[in-house]
Amino acid sequence: MQIAIDGPAGAGKSTAAKALAREMGYLYLDTGAMYRAATLAALKAQTDLSDPEAIAKEVARHSVDFNPEGHVTLDGVDVEDEIRTSRCARHTSDVAPVPKVRERLTEQMRAIAADRDIVMDGRDIGSVVLPGADYKFFITATPEERARRRLLEMEKKGTLEGKSFKEIYEEIVQRDKNDSERETAPLIKTDDALEIVTDNLSPDRVVMTMRDVIGE
Image 1 (cartoon, rainbow, N blue to C red):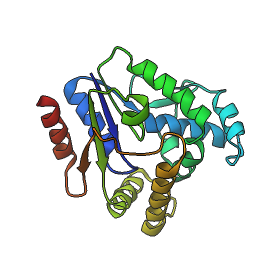
Image 2: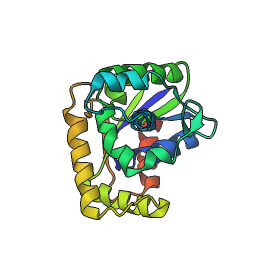
Image 3: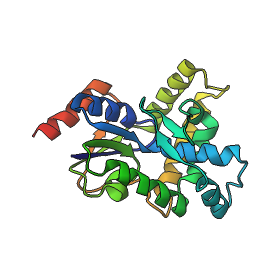
């Protein structure tokens, strides 16, 4: 069984996807982490992020995968903490839209999902990566709520780096715009996906809603 979960940054899709996969005993794949790892590789190499060909060439030099703990790895090294910085998050929208980058990572995602029960979350899972998924969900929340959550998360992890709520909010709005308007695999809700707005829902309630649909 393949379960595709899409939605904008900070809506809670990764939290819900992890919990759903754990409850069902399925493999969980965080595709957003893969794009962040690719972005980290480009940043470390000081790649010109305005040059798609240079980005694609640099990303092609590296291997993005997951370790047994479910953490994303870059060339076999756990980079889970490094990819969660605001700098990496901010520049992912420069790397993720590059067609050759998406093609490379999409192939890897499909290979991982082949012949497995899997829960995969991202922004184009139901529309591009796994268009034939058995169940599709679109998890979203208002930009204000997502900025509030991101602020609390960064404070907890010590990665706030002096960011204000306003700055985080503006980054999220810009990220939404970039993700939704990019030419290659934009963020969209497919017609066959169930939309879940999480502003006033606990993570447990979100998972319960998905389980109810799958149970039916």
